[in-house]
Length: 368
Length: 45
Image (tube, rainbow over the protein chains, first blue to last red):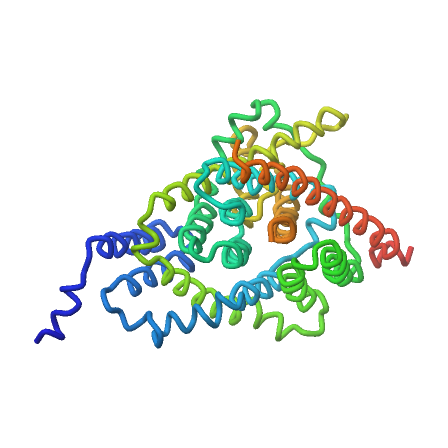
């Protein structure tokens, strides 16, 4: 009889709160469809791990085994990168390589958030860098860096990263509107996207990027190399079956396991701390700074250009693909129903995916 | 200003500078690749 009551006797209010947090995440995933593929497993993982005396965690618990095998070793983020690489089509970027600059400018949020976290006096530099990487708007990069620099903060960092990615359509528009005039938002851009890109360029691009990024920051080879390997499989044209497997089976299975394992890091004693609120707050500001960095950079280069760029394109330089490009196109259509800047925004968005991974690698090199 | 903030400020400057440098390098590489390997239909003309 005592055995049956053991769970109830060991139940704490903190675990109750975390189970509610898990339920909220599941609600957001199902009802609001915010990143359901991640928030649902994360929410359920949080419930599993906070049930008193849960057999899912602990030495032989399957979540602990998954954590040790997939997160501690960085295997899950790397597999996700291969899958993402196989999904990315770099041609919108290669048709308009100038968009790479927006992919750089919109990484400002990473470094500003790190500075903010450091200035609180609560976090070490490595912890601050892990919080800053929320601004990469790229879940696997956040997990990769946080796991190396601040494994104790992995739970709140990954929840913040994925939640804010889902909230890009809510976070970005007010920042863009605040930093641009109606006239600027109505700027039309030439359609360059009918230009063609040679197959050889599409194949050589992932190889060259890996080698160059690897030589500059060898620690980034894991991140960049996996992404570009996935892309090479896609572009080679001779591995169609494997490319499709990477885009579907590998992506789905790894996402599933990654989500539930991340959820298992949301242990009440670690998660219910004032630092979690601080991380969530700074993470939100990271996205605001990312958007501002991209928009302000576009406005800056417009000072030197005869044919102006729509500064909203700068906001699409974050890694949240394709949400950010869609947000920019929607705002453009609100001001002028015949203004189509989606392909330019997609180019900047793809550049953001490269920029975030490079910024992650550089952060690892500078702070590690 | 605490020591961690000073370090973070340095990382901000060097980090953003390096991100830009690397992406400028990628820009030049893409431009060079496009010059060496123009689109197939253009190469035929």
